[in-house]
Amino acid sequence: MEIYIYWFLLAIILVGLEMVTGTFYLLVVAIAMAVGGVVALLGAGMVWQLLLGAITGIAGTIILRRWKSTQTSQAPDDNFDIGQAVKVLRWNDNGTARVNYRGAEWDAELESADTPREGTLYIAAVRGSALVLTHRKQQ
Image (cartoon, rainbow, N blue to C red):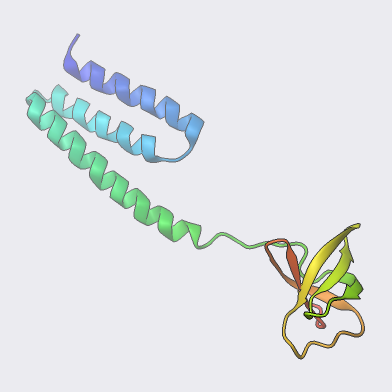
């Protein structure tokens, strides 16, 4: 068999594996293999096949990393707990509280020192396993 067939077979196998992983990095390597196959099909030597395949793989990886770094910052932060009312069970001496929310007891802290402790308190944020409380209901 001709060498370009091996390049294309490797590219097809990597595309199949990419469908399982979904990371796009195997797709970049598959494109690099296909470039190596095209160069082999055009009759270039093994050095050119490997060189152009490697350059394609490296360039594609750099482009993909830059693209992915811009995409991750746009992920929405949907926390359905924010804005929900909680019932304070007791206040601790250090200013934290124990609250009842969703049928369980949670540790809670005030959003700021001037947040009133009376009345209904709402979840402003979640820090680890502790709730941050405020007196203003957020949307």
